[in-house]
Length: 223
Image (cartoon, rainbow, N blue to C red):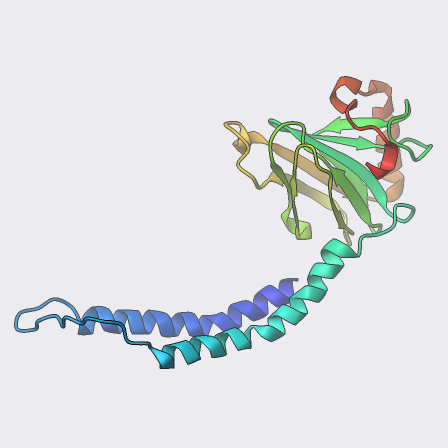
């Protein structure tokens, strides 16, 4: 994904430079000054040369279209299987991130579930699948360090996945203007060794879950 963005940047830079140079030339060449009257043109003349040039630019984009389709498929379509992934339910609201983890039984909606607010803990080196639905308005689950951004909608389940390759602490942002408190809707992602994730979940289990917040989520892991 990073390589594609870099390549597109270098390809479009010469085009940007050409546009800016032409723009500056026209600003100077055709500026208002004494002794030069603006031409008055009526009717419509088809700029065939410009049309062909634009068509060539569109054809240049075809290789990018084919390559980005593979990246899109890897990021969006080829999600890891639930048995392989570390699954977390994400339930944003104005203005916080609620996360829910299954307990030892591997099922959501049972007494051994663990919930946290604005704290997402995941293991390094294992695919993580987030199953998301908004409580109120449209939010956007944004992990810039992992190249993940996915809208979270009320009444509809969306999913995203990632696999971290190194440990660390990062920010979970909301990339959708979701209300007056949008600026403070910030969570924290902790990527750590699997044993540490298990220990953290055990330390959180004693607090239980407010089922009034999660009660709409029925049907288990598939939802």
